Length: 300
Length: 266
Image (cartoon, rainbow over all chains, first blue to last red; front, side, top):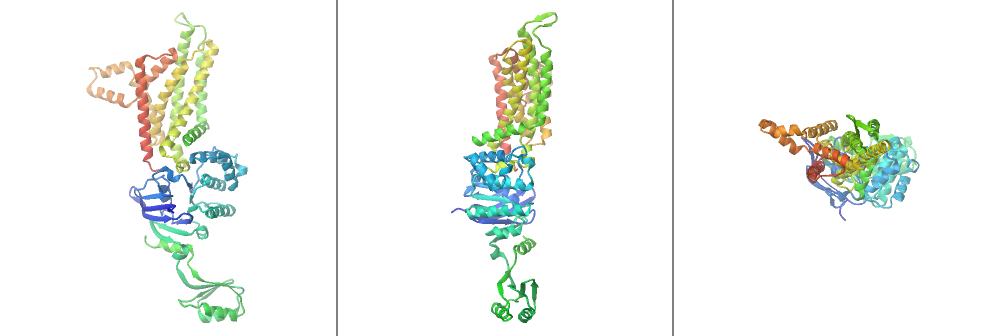
């Protein structure tokens, strides 16, 4: 099966400024792919090149196996930009109908009604977009991205500036698309969303690709065990300190510095002996946030 | 085709939300109404009573002038916003990230704007036709022939200004449009034309005039033909040549605009 997105040696310069330098990556069909980077890393530039709004200085790219130079590459693609800018005089219904006509979609009235219901805007369908809140605009933007039932969704900061309820609803929508086998290419600063939804990530910094892969493969393994116990007792703490003096406590979660040793079996014995229930034990890995900070601090 | 129609009708719908359009239409309507009051079934000039046909001739030429003038204002106003409006607001993103080429998008925008201009000027022409019919009791469709030709003038202006908005800020493009229109009227002034092409004119003057005549469309010629059509409803064979020239000029402008828009980072 061809890749959903295939980028080969993509470079984009604006005069003397190189926004994207020699970027190559593949996004497989059916995966949720996180595209991360600090501000000015080149993420939005890359998205705009893929969607034909900007022309690459060099390199090539394909969407669903069609070159980005062909407008048909966008036939099965839905895009939600960071700041949806929609003509204010249109109603939600009119706007989605217009989007559908541009996308060449049939069965307009039913499709529009279904989508408005999906994003929770049925009651606002006759209201002008100029009266919408930010959250409503974002939902409408997502609706237009879904109008052609795309195989590839490209989302640029889809949950930015939303309240927690809207945030969760958008995230659930993304996961629902994944459940249908769609590919989602997600550019986001909200690392918690990326951690919860993405199969793989890429981290861009100063126009260059710095990391690519699964979060669990990229994150460094820490020399720490994370224990979740039913209760913390002095006897448990003193017995664990015999294994390693570097022990920190956060309510019922204990962090034990192993200094590279395999202490799992001994920890289990000590916890059992203290009469406390061990709810979970895992080797602590770097969080996505830590990985992100470490990556962008490295020289590109 | 569906997408082209969608873009054109959306552009028309957007244009009719523009309050400035109604200000221009209101002013045009006011001037047309005032001018219609000057004409009645019984008019005399220099002691000579004019027959109804002559009355209509006068009235039609006044109406043609007003419709083309306000049509020009409306055209320049709309064409200044066709692309800059989309680019500045960012609404172009949603549209061009669909499976439509840039040429189709631009064509749709231009068609939508042209349709708005045609409807607005048709409304003015029809309003005047009815006023004239009511006052002078003459029903003369020649105005509509003149209107049709005026649309070609306005189409050129639309393309010219829209093209320039790809190169310069929109206000500058609008000013260029006005300058170009008045320059095209000036180069059509017969005594000036004769002087510039005669041996009396210095070589630089003749060269500038010839170059201007090539690059500036002869809208004055078209304007005169249109005015003539508005008053007599027939075309002499040689009058087709300026129409053809302006039509070719419009096609060249459209092609240049398409090429520039295709290559532009958005």
